[in-house]
Length: 263
Length: 301
Image 1 (cartoon, rainbow over the protein chains, first blue to last red):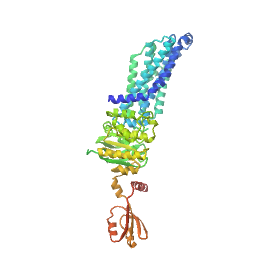
Image 2 (cartoon, one colour):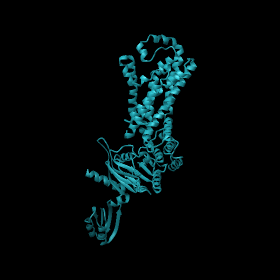
Image 3 (cartoon, rainbow over the protein chains, first blue to last red):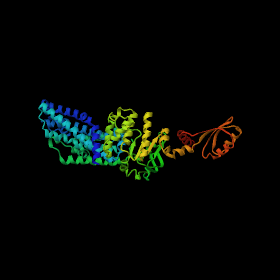
């Protein structure tokens, strides 16, 4: 069993090796640029932020922008990186399930003594690894940008900030597995889960902007995302979201076992 | 050789809402037998195969492979079979060798020597990405993936599509060798010639239903044969017209042509009383038999 999942994960990662550069490079370069310009824009940004409405600062998690970590959080880790990684997660798991069905590979794989649950488990594990590697590349490039520009980014805090994106993104891989239990069309799966990703972000935003709607935030994973670059990783949230992602993938595998494999 | 049938279906039915899939398909494929599954596109051949492989689930009925339930024991069954899907694909960028290695690991097969032998035999390029190969060359990779682990049952859906005539011959030879080895082969096709040459029995599927399962020889034997008879005295020919089973009778001088089905004893006895100058009997091709089944069906409907 382990050997089969290992073989499937290795193949999945090999197929998706380009995504590490396709996603890690632009995100990493953008992050590197953000931290690299911080020393030159620090004063003007701090003054500008003081004039922002409190609600807006609260909504986007901007307390103060007096250090490079806060700036990285505001510019990258509060919106761009989580949304991009959430979308990447759906793309990655869809390629192993719906993409494989569309290419005919799934028929061949399932001609071997492999259960559908193992195919889903392998896709989910491979996605988890791919997300970690893309985040690592992004973090390394960000650190390199800071080093070259002398921005003074704290490596440990930055690492926590990027690592905290991983369970959030993985959750959407779990939703992707469930969606593949209902449809074998890649555009349907990626579209539906990307819509859910944006919806959760908007729900969280509304809850932050209007305290009377704060309870809505429980519907969104972004409530549990926090601000790890400043506050450190919240272990309960990190493990809870990761566990929820695994449960969703398990439900997806259960649905996938029961559906007809015909698009 | 095992007494347990390689495949056994019992009223296997698959419906897609109001759309027809397959209906009450019952047949058996024995170990060491090559079974042809004949029908035009859309008749239900692929649906039957996908149901056998547990890729789609039957609405009712059951399928047993090696005596095991096709749904409950799907993983155990697949350890013992090889499958070539009708529209073989594996991803455009994957070279054949990588696909073989993955399948070998999934099957727990040590080494890919047999796959390399087959690649040499079929002149298949294992090192080029599948997306760069022609349909026929991709099909060769599919055949290798289906057969490299020496399965007890080969399920082949339209296996020779895109293969050139030389490779089709090689494929038919391989099927013969698999049978010699004791493997069962379930071969879906609309290429009647290859079915006639390699299959022991055929099932003919029409409109989602299995309308006949016969040994090839029986199927041809049951069909109407065409006769041309030339007698020295043409007066005797008219009596042939009234014999049981004779049809399409045409008389021209002292020569008659007609078709006859079933037992020929009466015709032989009748001819024995005359001076026969020439007698020619032509067996119909499987294609004619097959088309006959389809014509009958359309007439009935």
